Image (cartoon, rainbow, N blue to C red):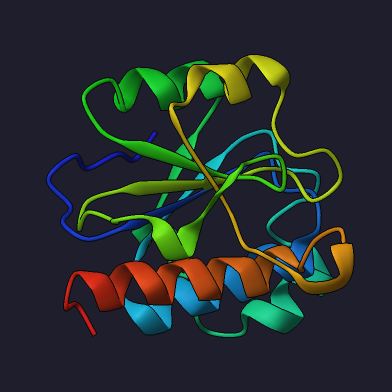
Length: 157
C-alpha cells in the first residue's frame, strides 16, 4: 500500500476495476485535474496490458496512485474519512449534494458495481441522473462529471 493520509483534495477510488481502457482514462483525468487515484485490487487486468498503455500514455505515475490489496485494507485506512459511493441504485442526485474537499468518491467495477456488503456499509450514495431510463454512463465519463463538480464546489479549479 502507498497511502498518504495527508493528501488534500478529492480522491477517486476504483473498486476492482476490470476494463483497462477505462482505468487508463481515469488516470489521465485525475492527473489533469489534480485528484488522487486509489485502486482497490484485484484489478481485472495487468498494468502492462497494451490496451491500458495505449490510453494512459505518459500520464501514469504509480507514485501518485494508492493501491490497496483488498477492500478491507481500503476501508480500514478510511476509518475517519467520508466515502461517497456512486451507484445507479442511489436515490440522491450528485446535483443535490455538498462535496467536501477531502472526500473519497468510490466507483464500483464496470461489470458488477460493488458487493452488497460494501453498498450497505456506506452512508452517502449518489447517482448521476439520466434521461429516458438509460442504465449507466461509462465509468470514465462518470468520474469526470463527479470530479469536476467536487472541484467546482470546493473552488479547486
